[in-house]
Length: 191
Image (cartoon, rainbow, N blue to C red):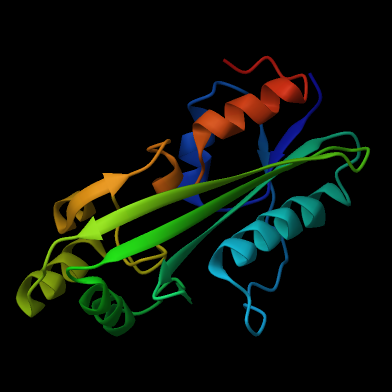
């Protein structure tokens, strides 16, 4: 099998990809993640996943490179990673009692310029949250590096009424069902 590189330093994505049992390296993609004026959240996720995969693939020889990005959408606008507790609290207040769409894009870039891509949509319905429980959640879980200010694989699951998706790993940051399919298409012996 050719070498495989995950174009991400995300511990969440690394842990997910490890589930497939394939050897891979990790590389930090140098990509500007600033949304373009008027760029739809789904388009932003696709563009960033592609840019990350291609940025690393450019210097990766015969390796295949996986790029992924997730953009949360509320009222048609992207929600970024909060970065601070105050921003996480503000995001969770805005999402309380609402539906939020999470676009998780995946790009597998080959050494010959070949690309395989997938876009996953997850809809999360937040229950109505009061200020105290939001503050307690942010203090306890510190979801400052997570789109949407929560970790669904942890305590964040208690913030929801429902999750509608086709791939439960997409909400964590890397849709493994699609990743395994794209790797098989590229010739990897993925399950």
